[in-house]
Amino acid sequence: MTPWSSEALGSGAFVDPYAVHPRDTAAPAQARPRDDGDFLLAPPDPADRLGHTLDPQDQRRLALHATLTAAGIPPMPEDRAVIDQISALPADVNEVLQRWLHHTL
Image (tube, rainbow, N blue to C red; front, side, top):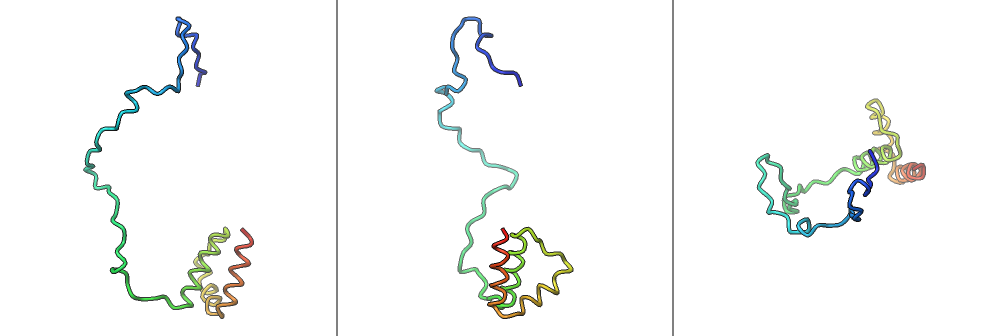
């Protein structure tokens, strides 16, 4: 990229390359509808949520997966059995393990 120079103008006039032209500040034209089917989704309706809750062991398993991934240690498929065993331990053991992993970040 070559540097910009006002010497090429010849008249010696100063041109501000960052100046805003009045026609640039006019309101943009109305957006045309898009034909490609791309649109924003409506926010979820809380009444449509499922009434099921996760088992505490499953919650600990998901939290452990997330913590490991955030710590830069993504679980491998062969780690599933070990993660299931760790998740079966009492909740306080799982919390301590996650706290240790959070401190490694």
